[in-house]
Length: 437
Image 1 (cartoon, rainbow, N blue to C red):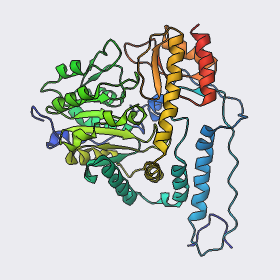
Image 2 (cartoon, rainbow, N blue to C red):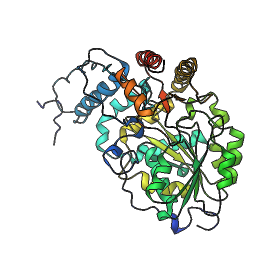
Image 3 (cartoon, rainbow, N blue to C red):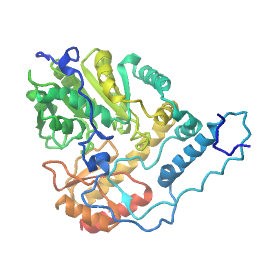
Image 4 (tube, one colour):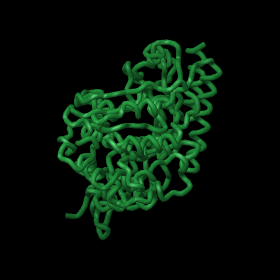
């Protein structure tokens, strides 16, 4: 008898048709950040001060279950399923009890989903765990075909990555053109592409927000010139959480893409009130030089599993994929993604839960009299705390709440706080009322 787990034996118009846009060898951290110790973590998990060791946990929660039990179950399933079915095996070890939740710190800065992934996604990962010894080329093509069918594009217009961060970094490197490129974007936006452009010493133009803290597309378009190698719009925007008018965005993308690719980051789009009115994939179907980027980290609750995708014209999609796929895409993430998009009830169930959470956070900040970016449409709110951010973060940490560990240039007294579990929201509300009193 074998033991369980023991097996039997550019011109004025910049396109991707010229050698100038061939990607350089990529030397990026997992999240696409600069190569330093902190860059090995996702930007939304960075803290300006170290988090102290916490006491032994005593309670349970869904978030801890997903973080601990999910991987333990996947591992156990892999050991059992990996052996030949004809071999006699000892009875499998029972699934471990749910790990205790660490409630010493409410995590209100990472923009994760506190609600977790689809149950179908979890089941799919456990069922396919033994297959993670193999590369997921076939499954990846299947996922691309499924996405293409949903979006009304061809499969060769879809490319995958281990999260959306590698897509942002790869695109930023390509359009930097070894320091000769120029990116036009907004201030107070997500750092993935702008950070990479700065790393490669290309020109970065960032226009101010409007008076109501939205991306100013008119100002951006005025900065586009023959030197521009890309534009970048995050919609809904991170950190402000609000959106630009879809009619204006479409007009902007059409005009800007005549000069260079227009990259639209839709990481949070599934969370907004009107997805159908704001999705921009139609621009790609119409043939425009536009890139759409999405992730399974937000509404789909897979931040720790890392699976993202992009949609572009075929040649550009192939060029970016040459970098983003690396040695292969996360196998468990692919099967979880396919299960997630086949779960027709999941997104409609999650959307109102995120909406209720961000509306609660918005009301708390408004009731405290804080200036705030109106009409948030993602999983967070952005408001002025009236003190240096480091001081605010330290005071919140003393109350058992961790907020985002960084600020955005020009907004040093502002913070972004995301939706959490009920106990996290309660603790955050109490802390805000105390710290901002």
